[in-house]
Image (tube, rainbow over all chains, first blue to last red; front, side):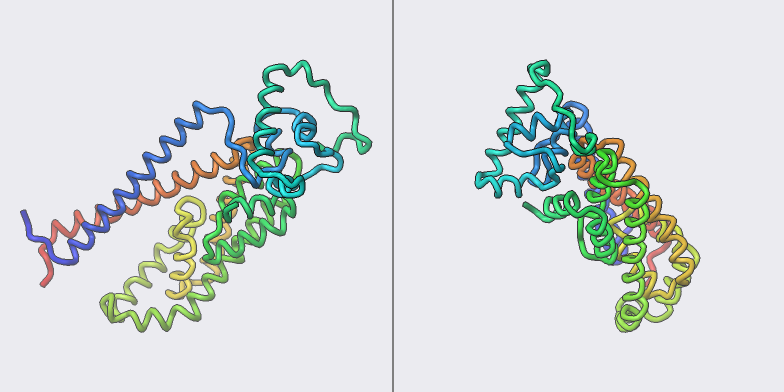
Length: 125
Length: 201
């Protein structure tokens, strides 16, 4: 085998480093793709608004607004963290209420009638 | 709440100005989760909270402006530094060779680092400026690449509007995987060529 000079050693090390990074992220990408295909819901995060959670979990927004005692008019775009702070309770508790309401809606969607028509023609969610 | 959560929450409340500002600052080199914001903006478009065209136009404008900041810093600040460090990488001739190569092939590098190899974007901006890559050509490839990046990520966000966080995480890992593979391929090729030549003394 040829003796490698310092420049070739450097290139070899850089190559091995790049290959390791590539391998690591290929594995992570595949794992995420597999997780994606097996799970329908993404975890509720502090940045999400109630409207986004409703959209993400395919639940009518009024069901979730009612579950956390919010008025859906005008449309509330605040993140959950801010809602929790305003209601003076931990974010985890608010998230648990949302998850419970989602579970109940999915188990018995017939128990949730559509909301009354909005005064602004239903532009708010 | 981490930085990503904070930016997403602010985007949800204030909309377009946050998107424009974050893309400008992010493209100039400050590490912000710009791709995540684009995916989220796409989701907000799908939910009817933001309009598609203003999102596309302002995002691309912010990103292109941020890139010009990086280019300008490289051009007027990096030039001196490059000359000073020149001795370490092989002297003036090596730098001149590298600049010549960049002038011939740089367009592709600028274009690809806008949308496919995004982590390289800020470094490419600085390098393009420092090597005095012609600005009109830089701007052309920059606008093309950023337009593609913005359209791609916003439309993916619109399409997978219910899974913003997961979509963005997946794209982030995929980007680094592609970057790693490209770097490994280029370095592997250089190594292969070097091993076929005798070691210079």
